[in-house]
Length: 280
Image (cartoon, rainbow, N blue to C red; front, side, top):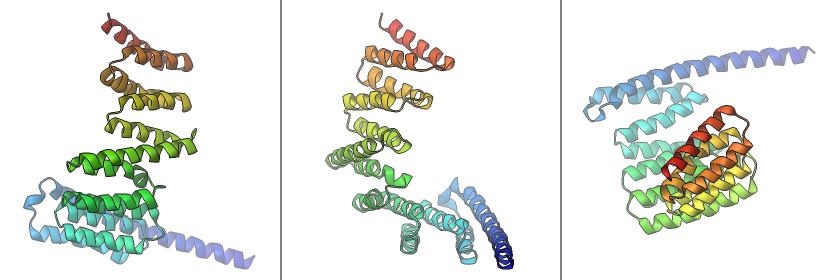
């Protein structure tokens, strides 16, 4: 009994000390971020002394409080700070250090690989950027950034004028998200995969397929949230792209039958009337 009491006291003391350190680190991070905001408006005219001062503020946090969450955030913020100020080599160095020392932290790793890819994009090194996004896709798909990586790859190629590579990347994204949705149908992961699947089809300009994804999502994930989120998608695909207002009316009417929410029914009635009036 005495031993248990001692352990409890030790745990409480360590927790308090840990909380104090986290709070102190967070204060330093907040101060550094506020200083950063002041120069973000016009980074091209930042005096060297101010740049050095902000740089030191970010560096000080992991040096003084290495095991805090604020220290992780500060290292990422320092890499972003360097990239924002076009100190790309310094940014890559910080990100490599994070990657080499954070094997047990997939969220931090995913953030570092994403930022590293972003830095390479700013340097117009699309192939290196894609390599980072592929690491995200293959090793960290359990994180949100990793989950979105197939689309980042397509976007990167598209922005750099590599249309053929972009199309192949979006096709691979279709397979990636389609498999995940089927394996997770009915849960939150499946719902998110379905949304990205539709986006990949839109990037490929395969509007019929994107429309079918929207219809399937409304059917497979029936909820007020789904209905509200997919109303604008139905309009964008069936009314604007496919010019099939009749199909949009059909979908809206189907949702109206399923929902018991008066406000949502009012919105649907208004959309249906508008489409019918425009068709006259």
